[in-house]
Image (cartoon, rainbow over all chains, first blue to last red):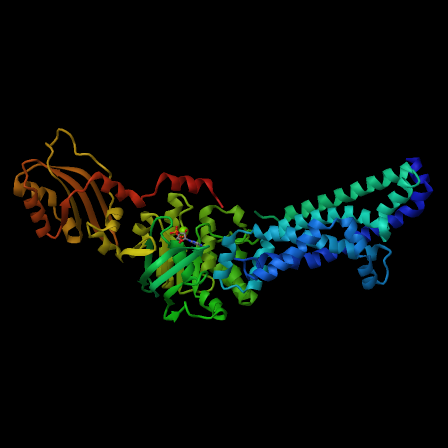
Length: 223
Length: 356
Ligand SMILES: Nc1ncnc2c1ncn2[C@@H]1O[C@H](COP(=O)(O)OP(=O)(O)O)[C@@H](O)[C@H]1O
Ligand SMILES: [Mg+2]
């Protein structure tokens, strides 16, 4: 215990690293949901036989999404997107810049999860809404999204947990945060205490996110 | 008033074409309940989907109170649909909404004022017998209660027409009758035009004034209940007044002719059988019988065996002269067909197993 508090690296760099990690995860989670949710809805409603079929556009968008998530390893995507980060936020260093590549990496992942959640909404509910005279937007906003909300929260939780993992990787290429701390001191300087503390903190963070997400999802579920 | 004229619907499955509706015509007057009965795959759901424009008919016309539906533009579909209330087999309620929220749903779509919605929801829930259940979620309600919410929701846009696709097929017999009685009561009170799709003859018997038999996408029999029930040769009559499959009673009478007799209305009041026995001085045995009140009229369907000394043609003539349909009984293969719309055991299994 004493070692933890007397460790100069931890005392000096840990608070900043925690803040940076939370920034990266927070900012990229926000943009992932902001872009990924509509993208997932779009993918779902434009499939053939969907609410607003657009087979060609759906195919193209779907392929791009699949290519980003399935084909490009995140580590490579992150490096490849450094110029984009510089363009958008003026620098390639720091948690804000790292959030650009983090978001782009997880948006397709989250969109796919959203698409799957919406697909699980029973078709009879959509029929019922349409017979009531709903517009397509009303079907989306009053049926698809509210009916799949518990599943969407669970999907967002999974995505944020994934982001914590990615953020550690992003730390290595300039993002900072706990990942960088563990690498610089725990790995390069063999400071075992730093290594253990960062690992424990990341586990605690993931647990907190997971438990909070599950609790929210459960309290929204009336089935 | 619902009028369907020569409706056709062809589904394409790759290169194959499935003719789901093959020239269906029917008309349901205001204030009455019409039943559509048919086996699974007959095209019943397709008919409803065409009536609600969830599917566009391939050809033919559908009109509700004179408004032609099959030709309206996409933008007008929503307005047209608000004149139709629809009740589904599994209610199809929103799980994220309370009973009140579900009933409010159609009114929210046209941005009705909040206090108006609240008042109307309370009125509708009372109408379907669900006072005090405003805040219950569908998962907290029984199947019958969920269906009541579904009916209240269907009425929320003050429709002229109520379409019910197998509204009781997922319910137990007692609840089925409650829901059917509710639909009948609402039809009278609100002067609705109601179409009930079903595969159970019980539903037709209990609430329908008229009925159509749908088979392979075609209406093969149709008419007021009392009318179709009087025709001994119609499939509907045989399904409405089913006789159990029976063997002649061995030893009682020596292998005499077996007759089928159907009497209705005035004929049902006369003591026909004793009349025959006295007139011809013969014995007869009742092998099977079914007596029902259909469309406000009494019907009786009997299978009787005559003594082998009886002159069957004379007996048939005697009965027909008194306005009673009678014929020589068919083979047992025919009889098996009689029970085709009786609630089968499998239906009961489905209703207890699947609660959602
Ligand atoms: N979307 C569809 N695509 C292709 N065939 C369909 C479709 N919907 C129904 N059918 C076919 O149309 C026929 C009638 O189906 P349906 O109306 O569901 O019958 P029912 O409700 O009487 O059981 C069936 O042969 C069914 O396979
Ligand atoms: Mg059906």
